[in-house]
Image (cartoon, rainbow, N blue to C red):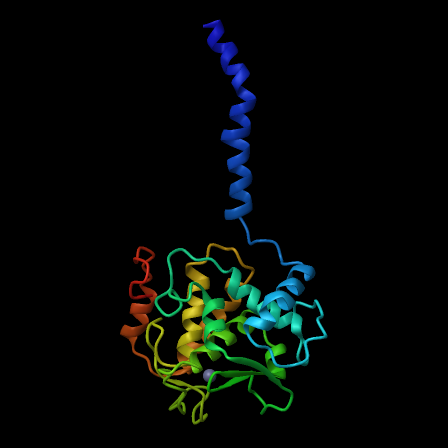
Amino acid sequence: MLSTQLSIQKKLPYILLHRVLVPLILCLSFGGSAWAAPSCGELRHRWYGRYVRDLKVSWSTKNFTCRKKKAKRVDDGLVALALYDLETARFRGRPAAPVSSAVNFYELVKKSVSKLEYDSGCEEGVLASALGTVVTLCDEYFADSREDRAATLVHEARHTQADDADHVSCVGGKYKDDDQGCDQTFYSGLWKGSGYNADIVFYHWNMHKSLRRNELSKSVMQSMINSMIPDRFNQISAKSIKDWRKFNPQLPDGGILVL
Ligand SMILES: [Zn+2]
């Protein structure tokens, strides 16, 4: 009996450390909150070491500021941050192809975009555009939210793909008669249709399948979804929304994404 007690006393520090403290620290580090913000140095390293080359950035990339909110014109640090957010997002399961075959949203954008340009003279209200596989960022892109700057790269990547259905004129809602304001059909979270469907796929995966390894705000993404659903799709039925809301986390990798 005594020897058992002594043995337990000897093991106590070990048990405390390995069975209590380490799991607790791991839990707090990985599950309890968002990961720490990337440092300016890390973003700079990724930008000059890889992103500029991967995305074939065409503007002069000498000015890298480390602001993380908004800017009035081109800011390399903000593009680096958007790419960082795409690259570091981790999900439970995998989105449907082609995101799954590209590994993640960063790889998808990298594969899809042959050149990333900047234009200081875009039309008012335009954040970015795609012509063939060349994507152009406008001043308004840099004044946008961090969440939408990341989503916009995914949106434009969709436009570079051969089966992009392109936008159409809205038949109703807030953007009625806006020439390129809508996608014709809401595809319940499938990688189909055009850029607004791509936004929905990106936001949905970050909202519901994220392992919280990025800092994108769920409330901002939810409000983006809420504003898009009624106004960015010409054909959207109660059933397609119901299908989308029935989120099933048990889907096999590469399976059809039913939200
Ligand atoms: Zn678009």
